[in-house]
Length: 106
Image 1 (tube, one colour):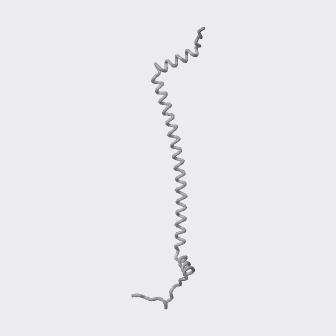
Image 2 (cartoon, rainbow, N blue to C red):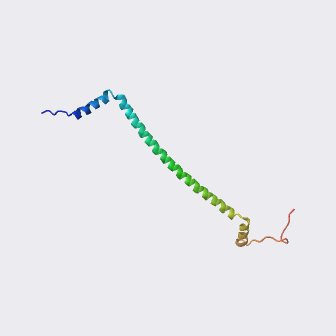
Image 3 (tube, helix red, strand yellow):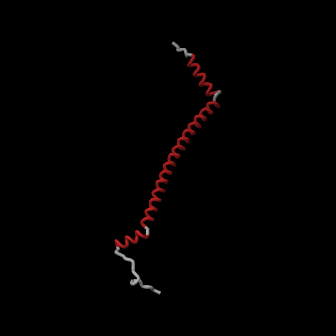
């Protein structure tokens, strides 16, 4: 008993044979196109990740900039002359010298 190949089997074999013999160039081009498409997808994915990372870094930079400005404001308020004078009077019990206590050195 021999099994007769169906016409679909013959067609598949014929297509395979044509791809290997006659269709080498189109087959190679098809593989190259698929590799190129996968490369585009990979590069696009990498670009999107880098853009998201850049956005995160920009947000972090803005937060640090705001914190730096707040630190400058705090430093300026702590360095005010009136505050230092008040602290010296309260904590160290310092007083301004009057005209009698001043000594002029020449």
